[in-house]
Image (cartoon, rainbow, N blue to C red; front, top):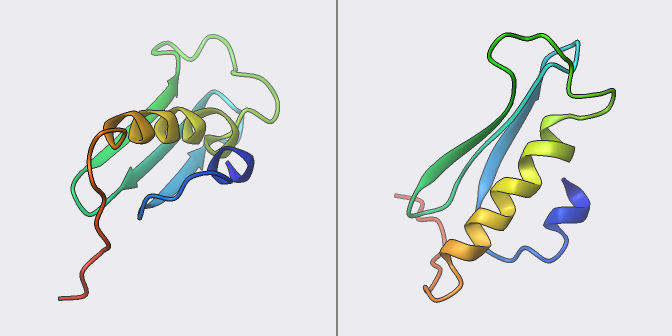
Length: 82
């Protein structure tokens, strides 16, 4: 996720997740305007994603590309501490 986030300058936060057998990976993130999650896996758990395919390496880059597209023509704002 660090490589994918290197050029990501939108206020955001999130959390990765990976099953211990690499069958599921996810990233849930949010900005001041919205929240979204990406899950990668198979409904029947037949096949693993592959060793090292984690929420950070598989799901987070998809979330980052999605958020960059959402904000392409939209202003960003900072989180508010209210």
